[in-house]
Length: 175
Ligand SMILES: CC(C)(COP(=O)(O)OP(=O)(O)OC[C@H]1O[C@@H](n2cnc3c(N)ncnc32)[C@H](O)[C@@H]1OP(=O)(O)O)[C@@H](O)C(=O)NCCC(=O)NCCS
Figure (cartoon, rainbow, N blue to C red):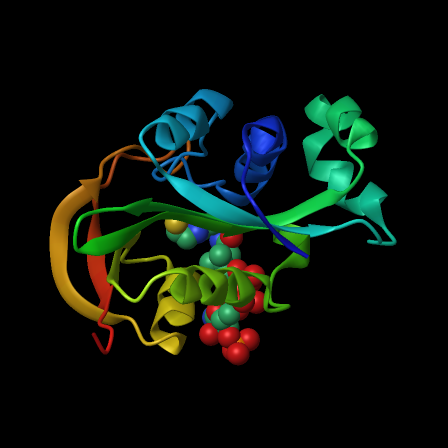
């Protein structure tokens, strides 16, 4: 089921974000990051499932937050977050739980977002994020530019700091 994101979901989204964004160059968002976006008019959707049979395997990477998951009535499988601007929509984040990837969840969320508005959509994605680049290209996004050295953090604490370019993608609409 696809549901609009509300404030009561943000703690669970933080956990999902922590699991999905493992590259420190593009760090996961915390609850307050999500809150700030909602305060600025951002919005989005979450893909949920109340009948997922094996929640235990999904919880495995979230040991620190296990209690939150046990108390959750449903599993958050993925989310997309957007910011509506005057003449375009910016896709800020999209993520699927690592144990549930390659099942079309991000595609479903992206389609929900695209149905929401006829404005053009834009986003930035790390040039080495092949999964995300393929996903966006599959949904008609085209490369319109590059932001050099956009991701400046280390990929992990032990790695050297190497800046990664961001590819700017756009999906034009008929209107
Ligand atoms: C990118 C991401 C959101 C894709 O989520 P997903 O739910 O697995 O995506 P879907 O199952 O809907 O796959 C849609 C398309 O993405 C591409 N894709 C997904 N996984 C892929 C992989 N491992 N390798 C190459 N392409 C892949 C394919 O084109 C796929 O379509 P297909 O199955 O018809 O071939 C997910 O990998 C993720 O959460 N990554 C970490 C967070 C992130 O980097 N977000 C994007 C930057 S904000």
